[in-house]
Image 1 (tube, one colour):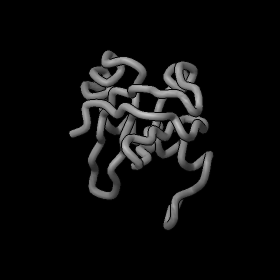
Image 2 (cartoon, one colour):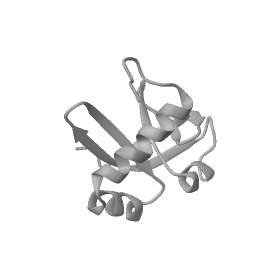
Image 3 (cartoon, helix red, strand yellow):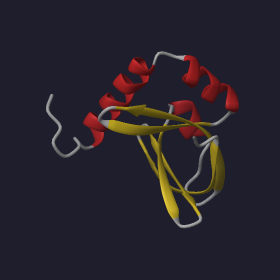
Image 4 (cartoon, helix red, strand yellow):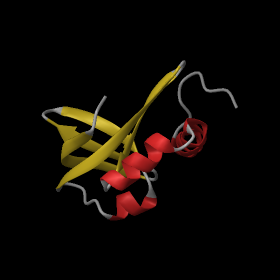
Length: 98
């Protein structure tokens, strides 16, 4: 659905980058490598993979298109598990049960 997001990096956290694109902040779960390529306040382009499941929509961002392609080809369950672990470490979502 989204091939990439292109805008200003507004937030960087463990496993998460927020990119402001025209006043909308896109929260992208991401890798340590991608985070190392980003700087808060600077422009960035993240290639994305949107994982849609029954209970969530998760946007993953990658520094290059190769990462996006690998994500699209990779088992979505592994990506969900990584995203769940990241969210659980940062702030458990409302209604989260372990």
